[in-house]
Length: 232
Image (cartoon, rainbow, N blue to C red; front, side, top):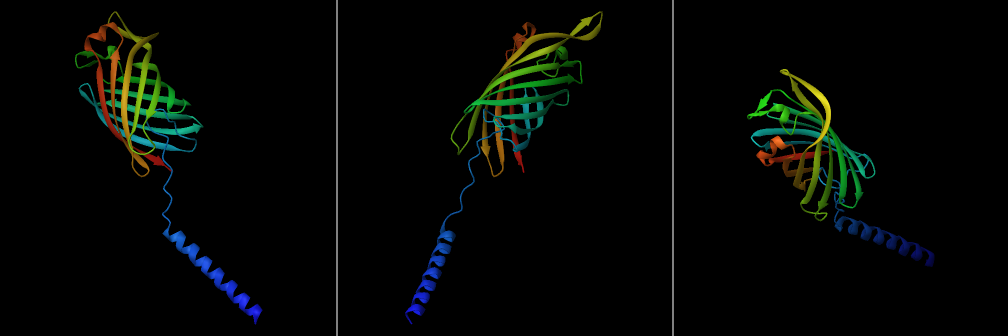
């Protein structure tokens, strides 16, 4: 009789413990996904195996712009980005960029781009003198991110564009020559909001021409709004 009572008590205790554990599991809230620390913009590169595609539209000086691109993590602290920009279909730029996060929230990048114009003159400016869409260029930049894990993510970037080739006119004919020169400097500020596997971003870039024949124009503003989507 004593053994039977012991077995019965043990069974009741086991069942009560299982019921309590099940009730606690149902009552406990589901854990929230970890905060995203990698971003399309700023100083936080994507981790290996993570990637996004993005699209943006904007306004550059007096021309509408469209941008398409993709970013993917390669090794810890390093990601690669490929991008296409067009200005009203008149100027086209293709670029590849590597971004390296060398300290928390800070990154350096190096982009190689090639651009061309579909017209010889743009808004009264010879296409060969415009600070975009003009042959091979290299753009180093410094990026920094601010903000908490939750809420808007704010990013800043400072860069300069070195034009590697230049168009020369001789006897009415244009030819492209290797002639590295500092063409422009730019400052960018951006805000990015996460949204369930995607993000929306708004950016403003001010490009200051360095070439003497373009300084009279002051700076070129470029405002864009876009969205990125994570690839799984």
